Structures are given as structure tokens and as C-alpha cells.
Length: 145
Image 1: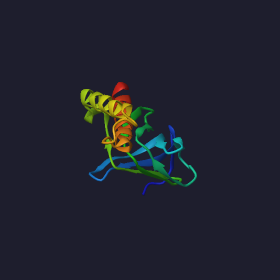
Image 2: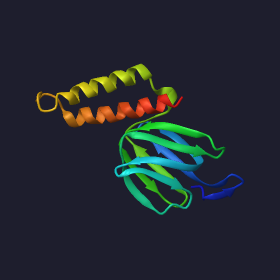
Image 3: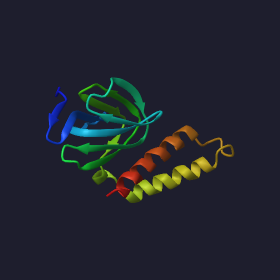
Image 4: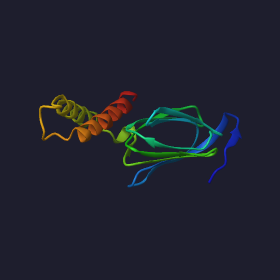
């Protein structure tokens, strides 16, 4: 486990982005924004300890060189300590892994299903809503390329 350090570019901390399939990211960063249940949680080195649910959305980080990176994440949890942030989610995707056309089709399908709310008893609205949020996150991430 790395400690928070002071570098010529400022204080940094370790960020881990983990899904059931793999560790997508394990690097030193300057800051991160995590999509949490109550809104975006901004994190800098030395942040107060926190555990919070993560919702589908865009995780944004600024690396040691000041470069901004975005990842589409699913639901899960974030654990924040003074020197590390661990994001454990059911899915996580780098922009290079996202097919924009497929994400747009998933978004359109989910919106169509949600438009039938109350009129179609065969539609699982909670699942359609989760699909919509995942598709929105993917589209936001690829739009930033």
C-alpha cells in the first residue's frame, strides 16, 4: 500500500478501480471524482475516511502529470482512506473498450422501455433504468475522446 506523497506536482494518492473480472486501474493520481449515491464525491490526498455506494456513472481522475482520464463504472462501493481510494464495481470500462454505436442502441432501448412505464407489465423498470444509466455513462465517456 502506497502512502500519500508530496511530489513536485502536489499531493497524490493511490487509486484502484476493480471489477469482478480484473483490476482495471492501479495508479497514483492527484484527484478523483466518483459517482456516489448522493452525487459526485471529489477526492484529494488526505481525504477523510469514507465508504459509500457507487452508482453507474463516470469516474474521473487526474493523474500525476495533470492528464484527465474518464471511465464508465457500474454500481458498487468506494472505500476512501487518507492514502488510497478503492473503487469496487460490477463493471468498469476504459473509453477504448466502449463501442459508441452499441452504447447508443442500449440507451435508446432503455429509454423506450422506460417510456412504457405503467402500460407494460412485462417490462422490468428497475433493470431498464439501470441499463439507461450504464448507457449514459458509456456515452459520456466516449464523448470526451
